Image (cartoon, helix red, strand yellow):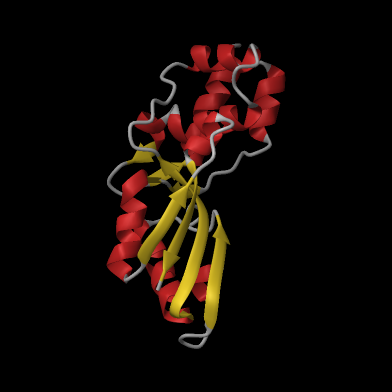
Length: 178
């Protein structure tokens, strides 16, 4: 648990995290972890993160039938199917723009209903269910997480994402400096 870490002040040159902030349940916990990282980094130290964001101007799928059609015809990867269903397609039902919280439990209940109705095939349902949980994740709009890091005192050096799949439109690498 990153929030229970205790390190001396100014002890690291670099801290790296992979999805760590998305797996915290609230904006407050994200702010707390950023403060821990800032305090633990030496002056000039780096915080390197890979995290999910909602990209500015991103056009998520609006219809599960269109999403599944694209997946079935091979124009959408399994990773894209997972991310689109887990975080984006059902945002109106499972995401709070005020708290940046995405409720996976609500998403999987919706997927259950699509499976029962036959829209989601057994094979697709089983692949999505491999990631089933009831976790509350935080998922920030693209600029909001960067702004949060700035309020803690971090300088943003770079944000980067590759684009071989749609998936990489919302999977960002970010580099911050103390």
